[in-house]
Structure formats: structure tokens, C-alpha cells
Length: 374
Image (cartoon, rainbow, N blue to C red):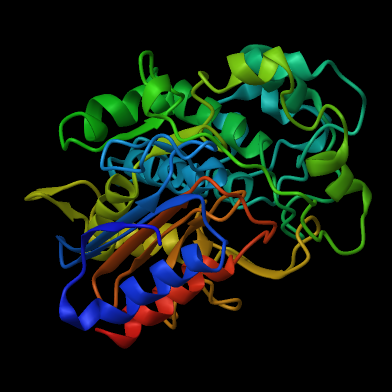
């Protein structure tokens, strides 16, 4: 039996039972699940091992790689620029990043770009995977690239490239990287153990991943899916992978505790209030999470609804029943969500990766049990 630590009040007893059951069934190595209601941490469970040998228990200090769940942080940081009237979702990317206007992209708006409508899900032409560690080189390639479909006509998930696009937009306006700005403005002031780019000295706290034994089910493979996920250069590999994880790439390189993610998303569920300070206005929370496009995604095998960088709960409902719930999921099963109707934020992290592209059954069971206890 795996020891489950943390706390769960009586109304969430079924959540603890579901969490333990995942370990009993051999579905977990180590994991943590945290809920925040109306700004208060109301449930926090962890268990299992932070390494594959079972020698290091998962505890409050364990950091997990959360991959695309990081995109929720990027969406928040772009929203904060809009909130301060330093940026408008409807302006073109080229208005802040002139080089982006190349190859027919002059009219692509910021909200289209960060909601996966720009047609740049990956690079169709071969390249050295090590190039992902060169921020300026990747941004130059994206600026020069012709879209793979007419921008604004459909979404097609940009698993890695959207982080460079959002990050470069942010840098051109703010002068800092998204990762640095998050750390300076939110992470450190509010004590959130959440980082974009693995910080120096944190290697000993990082959970060791157990990779899945199979690829996700992508459905019918097309050129966009192949460019996004299935070429040898679609992500950094080898030594480049080790260097890459230290980079502040806000699409893939988040490292966090479930508590930190849940507190951040809990703020977005609670009119933007985090420990007595407003990190985003209620109006901008509503604007950032409202639907920008909905329909069959050209990369993922799902009908998708996208906000301004946030994945929306409908129509697939990976995070409970809330129609206004939004957040993001990450490769292997991590997720973070905000439900403004119930003022509920939550996050799940783990190190045994599953193959579900969205709606991993482990957090789905935990979230369903949590809503039953509300």
C-alpha cells in the first residue's frame, strides 16, 4: 500500500479513495492533487515516489514537469498585458513583432496566434533538433514561415511553437521573458513554487519521469499533426533536451507543485484575487477565457474550444461539469483548471505519464469525486 499524505476533509473522502485507488491499480508512480476553493487550499493529497526506484517519497517540495499545462501561465501573462492596456488581443502580431508579417501573416492577430489559429504548429522542413535551444533562431523561422492553413479559419494545436510566439510577443512589449516576468511579478512575491525553465539547483527536487510505453492516439495523421508531433525535429532531443528544459519556453517548460498551480488557477476562479492582491481583473478573466474558435482541431483528434491561450472545458469536459471552466492539460496527464462559477481551482501533477492527449482518466476521476463533495 502506498502511503497517502496531505489532507482531505470528510467531504472529500471520495477524492482520497480515488487517489489511493490509482496507486493500487498500478496507474501511478508518484502524484499530487490540490484544490483551492474561494482562495483557500481545501484539499492537498500526495503519494508515491518521485523517482523510478522508489527511494525518494513524493513530498511538498517535489517539482513535476507539467509540459503543456505551462500554457495556462503563458495565457495569464499575456492577459496581464491586456489588463494594463499595453496590448490588445485584436491587434496584429506584426504590430509588436514586425518580422512576423512575412509569408502572408500580416493580418494574424494576437488572439488568433495564441489560440492556435496561425497555422504554425511545427516545422514541416527538416532541421537540427538542437535549434529549439536557440530562441532567436526559432522565432526567425516562425516569422518567415508560411502558414499551413489560412490563419483564422481553424485551430490546429501548436504544442511547442505557440510558446515562442506568445513569449516573443510578450518580450517585445514588456522587455522581459514570460518566465522572468512571472517569477518577478507573481511566483516569488506570492511564494508559488512554479517555474518556466528549470531553475538552477532544483534538479534534486524534480520528479523523475516514467515515460509512456506507447504514443498517444492522434487519429488520422495529416501534415499539420506530423509537423507538430511526429518528425524527429518536432522537439528537442538528446543533449539538446537537457539544455532545453532550462529554457524559459512557456508552452512546454513548466515545473511546479500541484499546490502552486492550484493556487494560481484558484485566483483566476476567484475574481483574480491571490492572497489579498488582484493579479488579473474579473473583466480580463472573462475576456481571456471566452471562446475564440470552436470546431475540429487540425492537429488534435478532438473538437476544441479555445480562449485566448486557455483550453476551454466544453465540449470535452476534462475538468468537471463547469461550462465556464478553463485551464490546460499537459503531456502525460498533468492539468490545471479554474471554475469561476464555483470559485474552484485545481491541479494534478504526476511522473508516470499516460497516453491520453486530453482528459487523462486519473485526474478526471479525482475531479469528478471533488465536485461530488462540493
